[in-house]
Image (cartoon, rainbow, N blue to C red; front, side, top):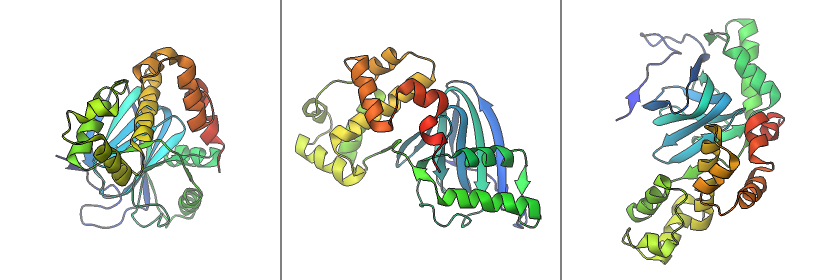
Length: 267
């Protein structure tokens, strides 16, 4: 059962304390923040390490120097891969009206990165204070120009397709063809293919590839070598995995996770 966190933007009497607040925390590899939700919109930023956000709708992997947007009242848990330095901004709902009412991973520009880190040096930022108001306004302006990146894995809702998704999530390297996976879920291959396309907006093959990509990213963040990540994700060779990774994210796995060059310069 999800636990609701108390608002940090309002006092106990419901009076507004600020438009933006922050929390900074460091976690070890494997730490999990149990499912909970906030009354505020949340920007979860990884200044170091990889975080995995889970909701009933899917999974979002957040590499270093990226962030994930979590709308208010969204139940979610967060798991850490490798040592993680998490920096979180809580924003008054409605402050960023242009952003989708769903979770998504975003590239973070160099300016937005520094703004997030600077905002985290304050407990709260209040628009009634001119210097703080300018910081809030620039952060909101930067969020209007963010670029979404494909690091999410939506889950199918249908119980039959969900059983297939769960089996592969438990073992992303499972090499069984879809026909064999269907034997345990009570549906035909054609039905499962249709359900994945309708409910995740991805073909089953694309969904499976995305699962493997995100799993490999978590393995790499935990300190394993590229070869280990490739094999655990079900690839026959390291070169095939690197080729897929480069095609999806534009660079090699090590470079992507080490310095975040792809997203760190995006405006």
